Length: 424
Image (tube, rainbow, N blue to C red; front, side, top):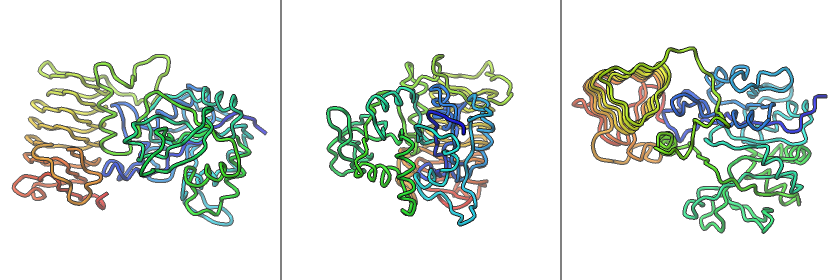
């Protein structure tokens, strides 16, 4: 039997419904980030930088682009004969067939995968956070405290603590109580959804709770182990960590990359973020173009003006176009003299000439004010915007739209046009 000290199980099957049209056709971990990367690149890079060379990636929702991006793991040096990277979708078994119904249920369905490595420890990760963490340091902490389970935790402002699962610890950082999104939190130490389990403890809990509907780590496995008397500790992390699960947090995390002194630095040599790189030509910036405080992806062509924005690879910004405070993902074309402010535009969108996107007053979105907010415009991948239209704030567009979809050439703030699938 192969023996690995610690293997990682990376949960990458979530839809990411709070990202709206951005995840209509792609899993959240495969969404573009920072002009070059995809969100899943960050935990994968953390693994290889931390010496974790065996990673199971659990996929479910819209996995095609994620699977294609990961491939055999070559960019992360995870193309190994023993260990390496394995894609783990749900599969039909002899007794039953079921989707992953919760985070712990997904891990339980892959017990056989983990058992083949006979690990001492299992690292559980989410595929939808932006951060750099040395998991080896966390493992050493786990060993030093003789822990059965260690939760990575991060201090958050007390006024935001009710959004998280928070932990209450003693002076040794041993966890005494859990509070899941408490109305009146007694602690600001929030769980990051990163866990190290001693293998025997994890296996026993997964088998014991296998019939628990939608079995989840935060709600079921960890409370069960705690009540059973297992030693559960908090590992406090004080670096940058961003849950990019909403359009606002996703937009903010991208904008933070282009600060004069970025809070999160993509350019450090000692902790590189690796990604699948296509063989593409370099950028081209014309003599009349203006680029000010921007990230520009490979093979983009800039003929207009780009300020305070993140531009993906293969994007074309035509003459006279003005882009500010926006994220424009791979392969999108912005027509001449179009003005875009505070928008998130997904991959392979075509925007016509003489458009104004992100204009007008802030009005709550009529159908999903919880998703399409913060003054942003969200345009889903493969969408087409005709020339000469004006689009207001807190709007969402998905699909190939025509002039007739815009009354008097205008989409008012808070409105939506959904030609591709249902409103998300």
